[in-house]
Amino acid sequence: MAGKVFSGRYTAEADDEVIVFLIGMRVNKWLAIHKWLPVFLAMPAMVQELYTQKDRGFFSLENFFNFRTTLMIQYWRSEEELYAYARAPKHLKAWKNFNRKVRNNPAVGIYHETYKVKDGDHEVIYGNMPLFGLAKAYQHTPVLPSTASAKQRLSKKQEERDVASLK
Image (cartoon, rainbow, N blue to C red; front, top):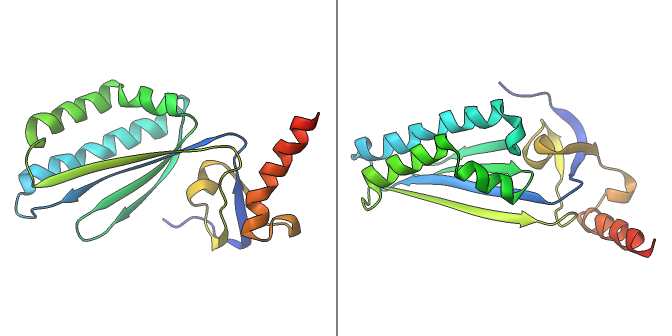
């Protein structure tokens, strides 16, 4: 189901650092479905858990698929909360199952990347879009004359930090 489309230009504001976590898998051998399908099917239960337990620090995610690779972009409040979830029972069970079944089997690959984005060190623009990405995770705000360009959006938080440090 598509969300409400917000006409015009919007940006997203986060009032603290943002943790962006990319995770996914790659099917290396299509015919080895018994190896890669369990890896693929492990994720929905974890995602459901994250959406129903908002106190874990998870905000939202976006999913993408191509011929061989899945990509999930997750937004987290802090790296500590992301790491805590990595040690949570549901995730540990999935990780142990993966290692037991396919760790050294080239039929399926997995990956993740973690990015810590300091407060204000991000810039986003959404034109005629539903809530998406950072705007879905944080504060979705209209673009103003003072935030019309990418350079203005990036420098706005830096200016706020500079003013605050003078006080």
